[in-house]
Image (cartoon, rainbow, N blue to C red; front, side, top):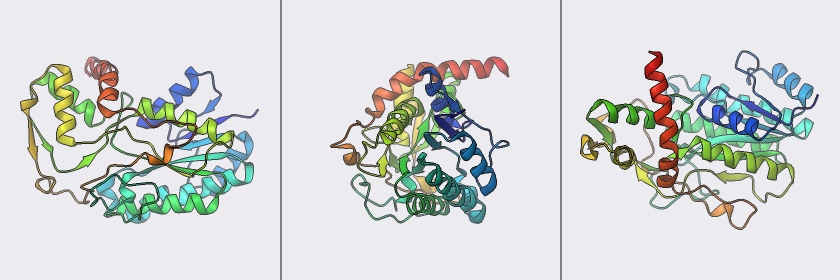
Length: 299
């Protein structure tokens, strides 16, 4: 039986919401776990895609441990570049549309205006290099079937993340030191899942005019600004959030100081970009509060 959608990395933060959205829509979706499909295994990839011949494959699988990639770049490259290349080759052979998730980290992060889709890349860390290699592998291997979807600063109810940590801290009365000199776009995974569904359907209909897509919430803020907004919406005192510079944390991998993505590529076109990050956050918080309440009751 043909399976219209296949989602890799379905147990992750984004994959969780994407699979849920597809099933709510009544779509047939195959969501193999890592034990059922290793995207770095050429034979396994080809057998899975040839057997099910999905109309759309959304690759949410990734090595996302940014700091670990600095000392394990070869392993990260295997998952973030060689795996997507194998997916792209199999999709090319079956006519499957591939939506490959990427990141703002492919850019250098020293800009002063939102990065456009075709601006020069230049990652500042190993993770970004492996993700950029994955983009290039997909577009060169499946130029007619592969699409790159760059996103950033994801949060949602499905897995632990920074915004859920803030929800927990707002309840406990903790004071937090939060980075104030890195700018980006907080993006709710439920909003992104909705866009991916629309993007996949448009790809099948051949109504897309570009292969590079920026899928982040509109507007921009810092981690500090995001934290204060979460506290404000929850009725907690935003003064409990203390600003600190990024270099105070001394992480192994450098982070882009400015990772804001432009959405100009959506216009003109059949689809619209995501809403403002503040509106999305206000809509998302009830789900995140419930998720944290469930976690607390189970511990």
